[in-house]
Image (tube, rainbow, N blue to C red; front, side):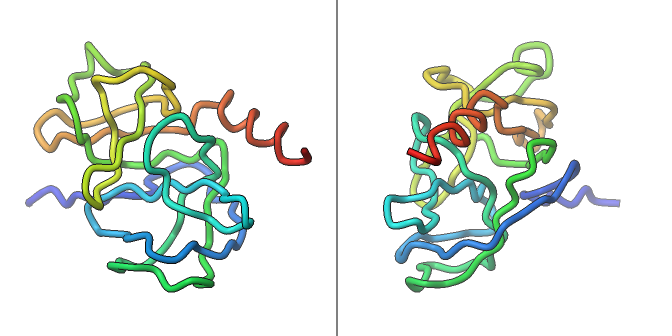
Length: 151
């Protein structure tokens, strides 16, 4: 039987909160959906590492979000997400247990295994043939988001 590839939440907790999405972000089937909270209090897709990840947007495939679209965002620290590899090739010996950055290439948000500027994601699994990784948000990144929230 053929292996089905599913991106998104694959295991772990699913504690979530409702948020409103920023207009114009594209959410495609073969992409990650990590979001940050923008100044207006809305969620917007993470364009690159260096920003504090709020969570994973559970949204339909859409070419351009309409401003004010409600969305559920998984914020659970135990959640594991399957995302495509945008740069590099996953091999367990080289990447399992290591950090990686997020990159947005076109509308595809995924892992950049070749960059370690911020290491916002922790690699906990993957597949070399299908070139995806299973990741968790690095706990220190989540803590930084919580500590800065009240300022």
